[in-house]
Image 1 (cartoon, rainbow, N blue to C red):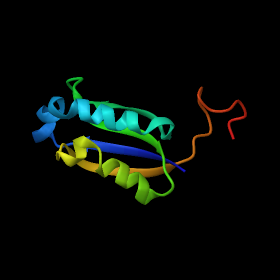
Image 2 (cartoon, rainbow, N blue to C red):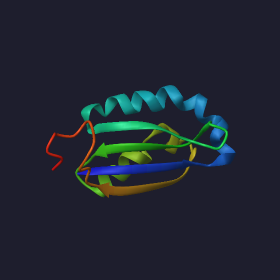
Image 3 (tube, rainbow, N blue to C red):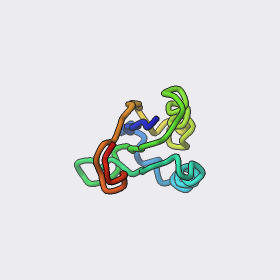
Length: 99
């Protein structure tokens, strides 16, 4: 199953992101093909306000564990994390039939 993970930063902790960025990126690289995309959520000042991920996982629990073990989450940078099961049906990276 695919899960959209929306993690919003604690504004009081957003300045701590740079100290954990290398570990965060290494963690994401370890996911390999399970991680379909990842990137920052941009805030009003165009700085990071959170992160969004599309991850393939066996269950919502597994997707939540992925999010909880992210170095940003472990450092307390994420204020909240929403896990949503999704079924993509259209997009350039999907098979041509869109099913």
